[in-house]
Image (cartoon, rainbow, N blue to C red; front, side):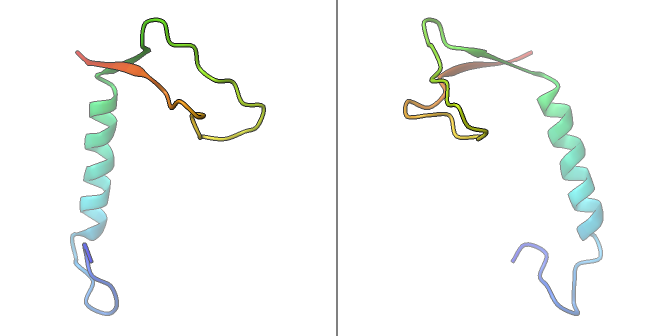
Length: 63
């Protein structure tokens, strides 16, 4: 277990989780995702995070 559980929980758990969110948010601000050239996504008529049969082909650039 990452931070254990039960009565002996790590004192830095909340700080580490907050710091992780801050670092992730900072990194995501520097990402520019674009669909790959020539890729047409499959449109599904339901609300879902599933990208379809072929997946989602994208180019991701950090700047």
